[in-house]
Length: 215
Image (cartoon, rainbow, N blue to C red; front, side):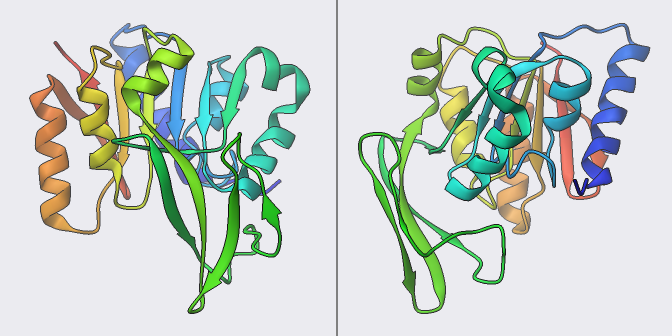
């Protein structure tokens, strides 16, 4: 199993920061853009070493297969719920694109996601597929989520849409982890949005920021 140490080091910094201040948070994580659960994962250490439960959301069906294999039947059914859809600001279908050279992707067969279904296609050299999308209020209601310790979102430039959807609800996670956007203006807007919800940035690690709610 090939681990990406940078994310584990970042989570270790978070745990150290909380421990030094004797802060406890709910042992629940929502990881949006969970990848394969190992590489570039913000949930691996929390779920495997610190007994966090939670929801791992990944719209790529191949990576979802990796997640289910990683957690196995017992943890999959009892501790970690793995979902194959996208989180956005509305309910519907969205087209997602992948990288043709990424060997973790699959593009050569039909897949079914829930009752709506999706088909993988090749358009102009870019691989794309349709998947179900739901908003945060709907997701939280369906799963009856009332408290979250860590909310991690890594959606390649769309984090701010999900955060706006989250902040339209009453839920305020103790910790938010986001990827720094490549567009400085979008990153500034996202940063200001999080700060406006009574968070402070406590850790900046490589291409990620971690916020803790002080209000």
